[in-house]
Amino acid sequence: MLVPKLMLFGTQGCHLCEQAEEILNSYLADNNDIEIESIDIAEQTQWQERYAIRIPVLLHEDSGIELCWPFDRLDVDRLVAMISGK
Image 1 (cartoon, helix red, strand yellow):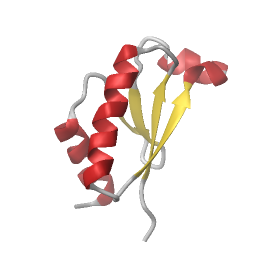
Image 2 (cartoon, helix red, strand yellow; image 1 turned 60 degrees about the horizontal axis):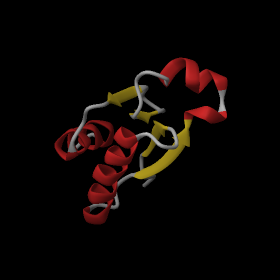
Image 3 (tube, rainbow, N blue to C red; image 1 turned 90 degrees about the vertical axis):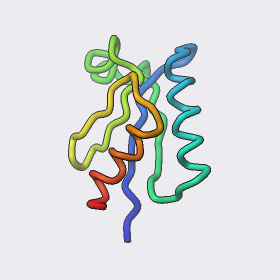
């Protein structure tokens, strides 16, 4: 079975993005049911335009579901359950 992939949009020096990474690392320490790719919005203009004032944002690209800041571990649990059909 394929593991759902989530994209974490953020940028260097963003303290909120660092907090989001800590939450996701905590989740991953207990679960291996998702893959997370960190994306720096500075790499592409389209990401800057879409996420500049909203980061950090966790995106499940296949469904288009976004989890916008602020979020916590429980929100991540709910998102993974939703995209996994649990």
